[in-house]
Structure formats: structure tokens, C-alpha cells
Image 1 (cartoon, rainbow, N blue to C red):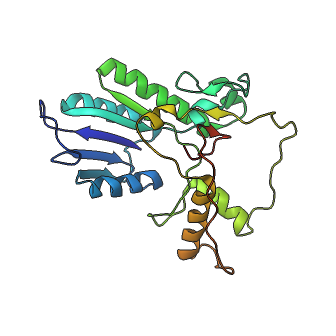
Image 2 (image 1 turned 90 degrees about the horizontal axis):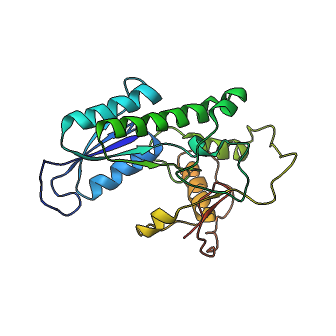
Length: 243
């Protein structure tokens, strides 16, 4: 998913949504559908595309080039994945993963992890194209994406949760050599912008409740809201905790 913030050239500062247009590619996806809803509620005009002409690498370059040629685009926000930065067998658990980290492409190819390989290559291409064309680029690397569904289909993260709830999963992997402590992913920049994070327990509760409402899971017995979790300053083990 790519978000392009468009405004008239030399436009004065305005309140959010006042006369501004945002293009959201892949608008039918999970994150994008919620983003479109939020932008519309804030008064933005949204132009969405359901599919890119070509995925990943070529699609990313198309968006960056189009933004540069338009001349009225303020910035491009590219939604990548934690898979673009986390697959490195030589990185220890004490390292805080940030924008300087990348997945090891040779390791991804060796292990046939084409998802992480594709995400890393696409994000690197986005940065290269943005530098060459002089486009302001911001990249977001989501981890586990859960919560109520707006679209009809179940996204990949929720599908992993659903298979353990509906009995379709036959195995549950267990690490032979579990790490002494989980990886840590910094969310400092997001917290500096004033964003708040929901507790994992609340996010999972909302996810399961919504899956029941949409008929993906049966409703079993009385449901209770999860207890509040203590605030945390970081993302631990690849899952968002409250900040």
C-alpha cells in the first residue's frame, strides 16, 4: 500500500482534510481500508486503487515516478513490512531493529522466504527511486496486523490467528533453541508524534469478536473484556504493546 499526499503547489497551510486529496493504492486491503475510512472522516478527498498494475518492485517505482512527475505531491508514504528488516541470522536479540536494519537477501533466498525477500527489495527500490527523483518518502513497517475487519476477506495476520481458533491448524511450531529474549522494534518516532498503542489483549479480543460477528467463528458462552495492560515503551517480539 502506498499513500500519496497531494496538494496544490505553493498552497498555504490548512487544517487536515481541508481541500486536500490523498491517493491510496491497494485501498481494498486491511490497513488501507481503515486508512481510507479515517481520511474520509477527517474530510480528505480519497482516490483509491484496488490493485497495482504490477506488484512489489515495478509497482513501487511507478508510484514514485508518478509522484515526481505530478509536481504537486507533498510526500509518499510506503507501507512495507517487518519482513523487510527482520530476517537476518547474524543479528542478535539485543539489537533494537530500526531503519538501519535490513533482511539478509541471500539468507531469504537460501531459506526460500520470498515474502521477506520481496518486501526488502521493494522497500529498497522505493528509497532508491525517491532519492533519484527527489520525492519525500516515509516508510512504515507493520508487524502483526490485527483488529476488526472492514473488508470482506481475512488478511494474512488474522488468518494465522483464525486457523488456531477454528481448528484448521494441525501443528504449532516450537523453536528448538528459543532466544533468551525477544527482538525489540523501536516505535519511538510514532510515540513522538503522539500516537498511542492498544494493548495486545484488547486488539486480540476485538479481532475475535469481529470474526464472530462476521460468521468466521462461532459465539461460545459469555465474553468479557480483557483487563488493562501496563504501558510499555517498545514493540516486543514483533507484537504491538501499549505506549
